[in-house]
Image 1 (tube, rainbow, N blue to C red):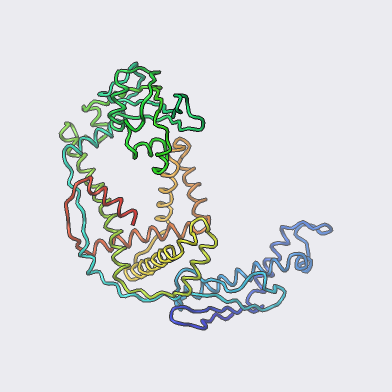
Image 2: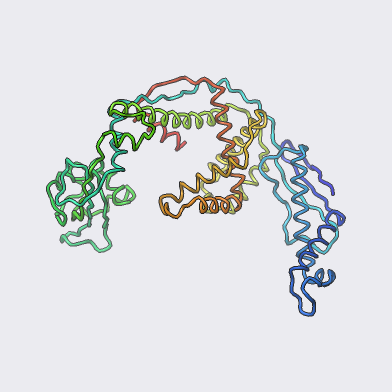
Length: 455
């Protein structure tokens, strides 16, 4: 067997693999015998089929399977031996249908991208900002209030009271010019709690019982943004709505909030550290501060990634990257449109650059990822995805089964491992820099977080 790098131009290169019959003959004989033990052939007892018969029946397919196994192992061993550091995975330059699997010897060719060594400078990262969220007492009390609502007792009410904590189920029906339901028009049922209902709608419903109906000018009670959200419409299509809507109060559920007493304190803090309302709010503020500190670190990590990509000179195997991207775009036509080619290619190049940076940092800092960490991360993904739809069925055994199925499909294990590694790389990066602290309001931080997520 021979593995060679040919036609290298910068970081773009070609990898050739020559496989001779001696490289796979023993493995092929073993495979044929294994097939023989499992096959049922008329005229032969199970497990007693001559190898020559098996070779005639499935020899070509078995040979192809064994040669491809030997091929992939030879490439993997060559890369892992340290002789070759590559970007992404090799791309074959041959087509399977062009290979004569009857011949004894084979030669395969792959395009590869060689990985550059990068000079990483962390000093510019000290110019970044670490946002510290300054919480007001009112914000802490409001967060506690929203949390308590999750434990509220619900009961049907006779009338709607805009000043009480309750849910109102309201049906909206678009009307035509004659005041009748518009055929094919908008019809939605939405529920509103006290904190989310439009003040004008709350005023209309105040004191009304279930079954109450009236006609309104929809633009008088909702803004365009509210209408787009409630009716699940594109903002540009709002102009096509008829102005009149019938609203029907279908049901009212009153909430009885849990009292802020010792029993409630023990429910939320079983360790007994909270015995007064003041202590409860102090403890809750600490929880919120820890939450926003983690969120702030997430924003800072995204800023660190952006800054490193902008300020670090990273040479790429350009021809290989372009070919790899075009292969991906062809296989995923719904994710990449022709008109977005340049933008998507640039995004792909940045993803590759970050992979190079993260792998180099992980190697230099001996950052490793264990199988246990990958499984734990995947379990979290599965749990968060399924807990809302089938929480009672998500037993520990089921979660383990779903996680195993997920990690054994496609490239999910490697993807999960890379995500865990990136988290550790970010932790290391954040420990090496001293960003400029800036205290901002909760609302301002939420705006910055949205911008960071979109960028």
